[in-house]
Length: 468
Image 1 (cartoon, rainbow, N blue to C red):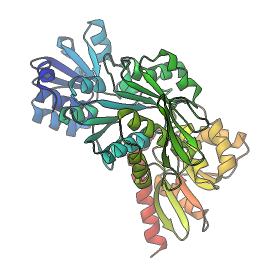
Image 2 (cartoon, helix red, strand yellow):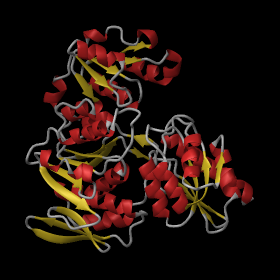
Image 3 (cartoon, rainbow, N blue to C red):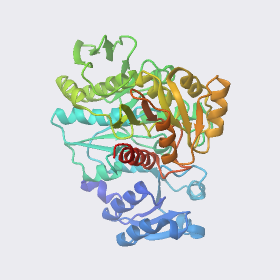
Image 4 (cartoon, rainbow, N blue to C red):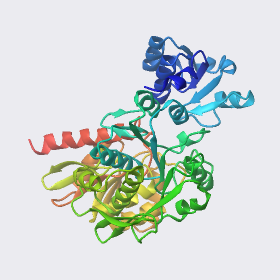
């Protein structure tokens, strides 16, 4: 639970929360427990918010939805905004015009947390790096909350809920999105890692510069005793090094670094001002692909800079399984492997996952684009795909890019079940069928988890038919 001094900061305050999704409801629950007078706002109409309204009423909080969504917001002492709420939201504009403080969920979580926070962001690799960092610290005997934007199984632990539960002797390892960094004002992680930057969420951010600068806000309030972990192989990421006040550790898959983690053959090594040490061998790890070597390097740097023992890295890496929806093995059916990579929601992630498979695959791709283009994905199809089944809103755009690149083995499907069946019809023993969308899921599914679950259900149905 949060420290008493921090609890009293919110007692009796009028807290207005924008967004009735998971993080908004978690904020409402915790702020109510801290004695705040809570009102929760959402522009959706009441029938769409049935579950959230029920939870909010049980808390005793006030509710403003639909056309009346932002009534009385001007009375707030502070506003908490959910990650999915854009800066153009009328409620946020009202708050800014009236000078009402706006907090993101992670800002609020930081303010009530007695525990140190390790915060990890980047375009790709966040979940794997966050989960692996947590496992290394658990091997080191720490009591760890893995929280933020990460999903463990079917659950997501919002940072604010972890912050409320944690004690000063615990550690919170949090996956952080760019959306969550838009409204930070004091957020100061003990260790902050920026894994990579590539085109993503350009439907939310106006350009790549703004997107990158938003990610870099992770380091804004760190002090010299804190640590920043940067990808030395990413020119955009390493370009922030001179602006950071904390102690910079780098990680690199391609070359040795002066301070941080790097590869020597299949081995991870650590170098600091005190010397260099072997950390672990990666030959037994269950994660596929060179991108996962980068995730291991980053996780090792995060945990070791926090004070974990080096031998804990080897133990965690050897036992760590791919998180759900990330090149997740689903089934072998008559010699055909099925992989669920639904978390692959941008082009760079799709390309790297196809590279990781290591042989031509039958790919299910498509969904709702994020404002980028599909040229790199089309080139990856030429190199790594045997056939592509396209789904979703951007299927015509992906098809156009693929045809321009000379890739013609394309079909289209209207549902996940149809896509799996089309892929199966073209598969032979020894093939891999992978869901690697390269797009967001919201045109056909609630979220990427729903999409991945639909893929696994379709594969299970297929197995029942062909193996009966």
